[in-house]
Length: 242
Ligand code: FES
Image (tube, rainbow, N blue to C red):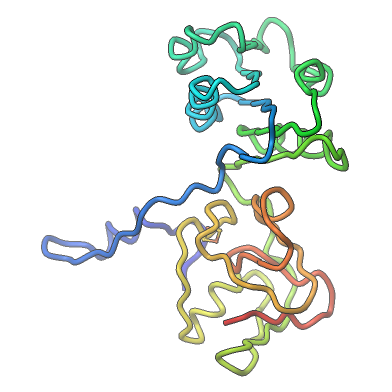
């Protein structure tokens, strides 16, 4: 059984040697530019600029309507500023050392216009959480975010019914559904085991879940779940199409 600290690097150290054959798949992007929105607001906190930078430059190349709020302690600490020089009129750099933390909804309000704005946020969990909360329920804003860590505790015990394999498994407190499935000899593809990458996406047939990932509710319908992190929302039996 693997825990959340395990991952590809650990597996390679422990198992791979010269001559080991590895299967590789193409990269997948679960944090991409929303093609349905005609306006884009990007918010990056610290190292969160990493994916946001590429998105900003892509939007610039497309001639799209966009603006970036880049938050960091000071310019000296903020990466990639030189890459943004060519689009500086669309970038607001916010140095918290001199200005304190920004009131994000107030700062970005003038950049939100039209029928549909996609708001992308990447950075510390606190920033992502507060931005998601600030704009939830707005019909004119679609929030898409990327976190670096899972936010869900694997609490509570519940049952999962396997629609195609047949039978049920009990998922103990503190154990992920992914781990419980593997214990049962059922392997599904995974990468992050933290609800971030989307690799373990599985059709959800019945039952209410606390999704716990960074994907459902922002970019996806509610008929899928991510067995590396989801939990049963109540006493429902969760039915998966596995
Ligand atoms: S393995 Fe990445 S979301 Fe489950």
